[in-house]
Length: 144
Figure: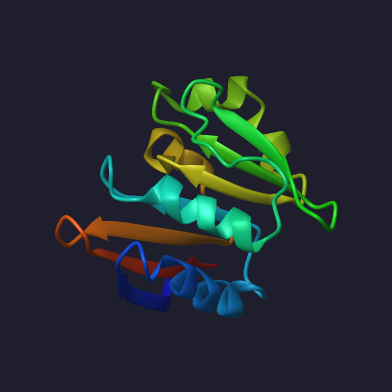
C-alpha cells in the first residue's frame, strides 16, 4: 500500500480537490474503493468526480439498486456501487460484481467492507473522514 494523495477540504473546496486528485490518479487502476462513516461524503465526492468526468446522468447513491451505470460525454461507462445493504460477499457475487470489475470500466465502490474478500487486485482506496461539520479529510492509497 502506498499513499498517493491527501487533502483536507470543505464542500466549497471539493471541485479543486477532485480536480487535483484526478490529475494524479489517471495512471492508476480502474477500481476505486470509497471508505468512510455514514455521512462522511463518499457519494458527494463521487458526484463531483462524475461531473468532472463529464457524466451525462445525475449521479446518485445506488443504495437500493446496488449499482448505477453512468456514461460520460466520451462514451465511457462508469459503474457506481453501494454495497451497504449487502450481508456478505456471496450477495455481491450474486449481483455479478466480478463481471463489472473485469469489464475494464471505472468502478466506484462505496462500503467495500461488505465484500472485503474481493479486493485482491490493484486498486485505489479512498478514505474520507469527517473532521467537523464542514471539513473532511481524504487519504488515497494505491494497493498493488
